[in-house]
Length: 616
Ligand code: GCU
Image (cartoon, rainbow, N blue to C red):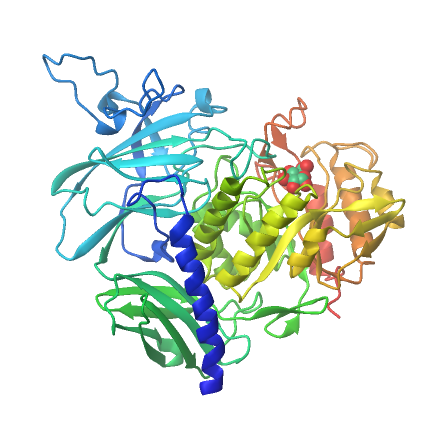
């Protein structure tokens, strides 16, 4: 037993270090006390929902927050001031008369005039509340793209940067009995020193794009936890729980009723509880059997009820082992674009539709690109048995030599892993996509990869790399490969380069003895456009690319999975070919209106026959 305990404590100390790290430098530009916290499983807690219609004011000059000399105003619109007769100054805004926008949603697809609006928008919402003794209150924001500021009753409660991760602002000291109001300013302006930066091949939907709510917790509460199956001991469930405000000597309890398993643990100096418990009769989670268990965490007056699947994932040479067995990842890449209505996907229905199509394709795996997706998507993947590649929005050419940019990427990574670490579906944390090969970049992403590994040593680290070619040989030798457990490569033979048939004569040289994933390949097609398989933009041309790609990929003995680009057409301002693209990337196997293209059936057949990828 003693022997068994050691690794967990060491790992725990590393996790502690990182948590301290996280608390230290995230949101470096937010004032103390206004730094949002990470809450694991926030969506599992009872909450007062603020979803619905919010009053909104579009403010391109941000004059609600900055004066004409660009100083931050003390009398900004966050005060939600109501003009009074006899005022000696004009009040030039009134939320009660302002038009509404829905939350959660992007603003771009809600109003024609806002489709391509990038800039600040103000949101205001009234609510009644009754403060309770020995209770702390947090404003939970599922996501706000890109920079956001929050005030309750005119009091600043937090600021945040990053459009795809959830965060929680303490409002205990700001709420009052009776009528309250929350005001948010959200600005989706793109920044050179942003994460992502100026250029993306997806539309930069702005707004409170995921649910907003009020969460009440006791003075000592569980803010983060990790519950997983030990890789070393097949029937040992282990992990840690961090309790904010924990009294020394406090105890926590972890219970899995269905396995008749329960254990308690005591706190260390910083409110961290490590636990291990032996279980009998565990049914492991896998795509074939996506078994989820009710797990109850108790700490003093606080408790959380989770639904968690238990599985292990690791590599062995060039193999990926799921529950100790080699696995081939039959996947597809997916953007968080809502089917049919377009805009940011954020509902259970969106998730069911998108992942339902992936299951119909015969997938056991999906790449959720290029940023953290909504918890509803991850919960659906857990339920449906779809393995997940989850990605941090380090996309294309960031300012890799700027330490502030690294801090932003680290903060987003901390929030992503802190929030989503208990999803059995997630097996891969991707650090980046298609970044230029420079020393600054390799150092930047290697730092992120090391951070991810210390935050979560139970999963695999990857990234989507560009590949170079010499003649008919594709060469995978990007130095970043050293920092990864699994190598992802994007290639577009037959679309951006050469012809579909060129895949037949393409060889691959892979300079790493690691599992290889082809994280992107594909081509564009307008649904319903038909012609010969040499006619670009037709379904026949796209299907032809897939046929030749599948042949080539089967010749790569080190290949352990693929996620063709992309499940569904998605909005992108780069794609302006009239009558064909119309501001959508048309590489989907399905159009944004649900029309399946021929290539959908080519890939479906290969996945259902399992004629691609042979786990050795
Ligand atoms: C790139 C990139 C995607 C993009 C795709 C395309 O590889 O990673 O974000 O949409 O190619 O060009 O369609």
